[in-house]
Image 1: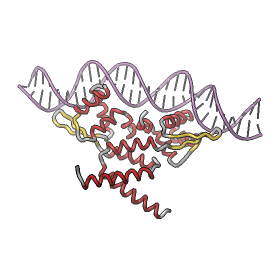
Image 2: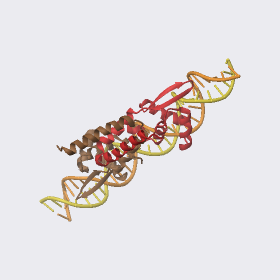
Image 3: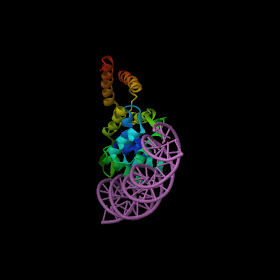
Length: 111
Length: 111
DNA sequence: CGTTTATATAAACAACCCCTGATAAATGGC
DNA sequence: GCCATTTATCAGGGGTTGTTTATATAAACG
């Protein structure tokens, strides 16, 4: 399954978004997604499985709990594709220069 | 249909790749994709329709020919998502600084 | 041990997407 | 006007994917 297929599903995108904040248990992920999308626990579990098997997420067992974390490599594949075939480097470079400047400033003067 | 759904299909990704080189007629796009994926002309036409209707491509008529061009805005949506939720800014920023420097150098000394 | 909690798996089903083959529409050349 | 070319659309079938309900597994706890 290609990276774009993985992220093609809105539930999986949301899971990745949630995991961007850091490690989360399957339970808390399920609770959020369950209410937001109105789907069952097994449905969420199936999506977590897809993220696992595609390398988008890794799991750590702790008792009965499963702690999920996002993996960056597959996301890189997506951004690489966009960078390669989206021919808008001009604008993109400008935007990223701004972003880099902003990042540096915030590093110098941490909140 | 979300941007990731559009690019979830390998044929559509390939079409965007081909269009990255510049405007192409439906015919030449069809020929390439037809041989690479072994699908029919109507199948390719359907994919071009999806790209059209999702804003990933624009069309210009010239006689019976249709000239397709890639549109950058929807691709931006994808890269924005990755930038926001893929937490690998450290490496990413470094890589892009390099890229920016490279771009500037090549602007100064055009090939 | 028996029960509860946390998570995964299995079976069945529905929806959707993509494909093909046939055909339409519109332009171009003679 | 007639035929060829280019591209799009339509009707229908098939396969993948996501969902639910029910159940399994496995640890924690009394």
